[in-house]
Amino acid sequence: MKLIEYFDTTRPILSEGEEGYDMDEAREAYMLRVELEGKTVVLPADNQLQIDIDSDEHYAVFMRSAEVLLRNWGDTCEIEVEEHPSSSGMPCRHITLTLPFTVEPWQRIALQAALGSDPVRELLSATRLIRGDIHPTLFVEPPLRFK
Image 1: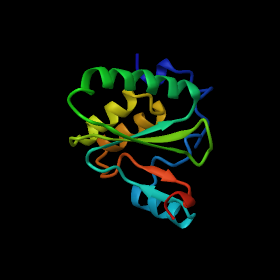
Image 2 (image 1 turned 30 degrees about the vertical axis):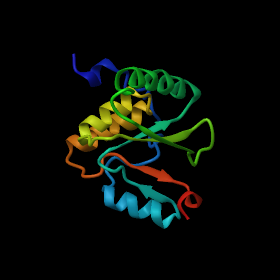
Image 3 (image 1 turned 135 degrees about the vertical axis):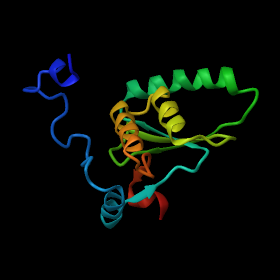
Image 4 (image 1 turned 90 degrees about the vertical axis):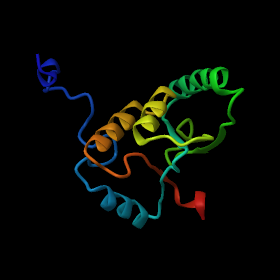
């Protein structure tokens, strides 16, 4: 059975555009559009993860997963944490982890998903990466954060 047959297409899980952006919009055009709206686009450095937390449940997953990181990596490397409320307000937040080593884009997406980042965002990031997007992962921050 094909995936499209598996789902009842008369009742979509996500409403059209619910994730807040058009998957067919060129990434550069999207970045320009949100900057013209006064927001700031933040691309991760080669050693950063961007965790998009959209609920208290996602945050609980992040905290449990961060404990796993500490137990397995804590003695061998230091990980810096930076947290900011997202433009949606709390409990939504953006967490940036700075690692002492670089990660490939596919590793970033996998680690972000394992750390509780919004699963729809990470699935769309994986899709962008497969399609060849050079910026599959980014944060859009409110205008005041970086001014």
